[in-house]
Amino acid sequence: MRIATWNVNDIRKRLPLLLAWLEATRPDVVALQELKAGDDQFPRDALEAAGYGSLVVGQRTWNGVALLARDTEPIAVRRSLPGDAADKQARYVEAAVQGVLVAGLYLPNGNPQPGPKFDYKMAWFERLIAHAAGLWKSGHPVALIGDYNVVPTDADIYSPVTWRDNALLQPEPRAAYERLLKQGWTDALHALYPDKPPYTFWDYRRNRWQRDAGLRIDHLLLGGSLSKRLVAAGVDRELRGLENASDHAPAWVEIR
Image 1: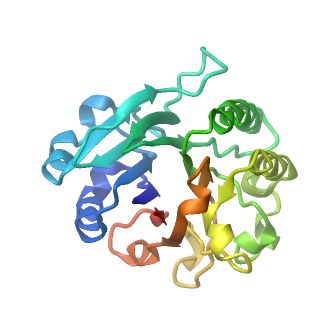
Image 2: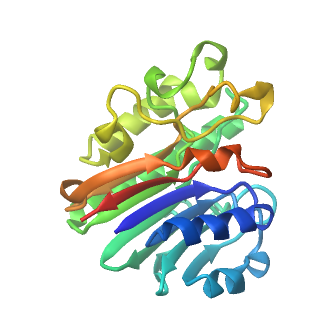
């Protein structure tokens, strides 16, 4: 079973790339982030024609998440992260697919920091940690995947020097990510590539793709029986180099 996550950075712009990648790699489940599209703008028909059912929590402008499932429909569990009924940003979706509970998330960026956007990031992170604890204790096979907008360590970035003031590298989100892992989750990319996990994001600015000046901010956390069934993980980095590409590349895991 192949489970993937991809921040597509506008699904309508990236639809041809998404469809070609789905055809080439045939993942069983895909979490998408930053749709930049409302539910009515989501290309459901094109994805269905490609063999994928979809569960969408759309939002215009900057947010929006979705789960795709090959040859089936995701069984919806949650369409928002619990803990704040007033939060209307579309950043979380949870569904059952082929016996696995898959949570797709788009954690807030938090820039500029300090400030209200960083405060929102950390409050959202605390809600995620609380909810994830319940998912872990359930004992079900769970994949907690998506764009976490946190660089866990300095080994997960080409050079931390020019990013020290960025919200992605601040001590608070790094500590929150570590607390999340300590619940028992397996960070699949780090587990298989402990010395130098592959990058998942290359900023459009300053020729960062051409210089391989990347960051690892998209993570695949496995819980329950999934971590023991992990056989492979990787990043389809070549998609970042294509014309009209997202600034993220798809990351994936394979489980027995």
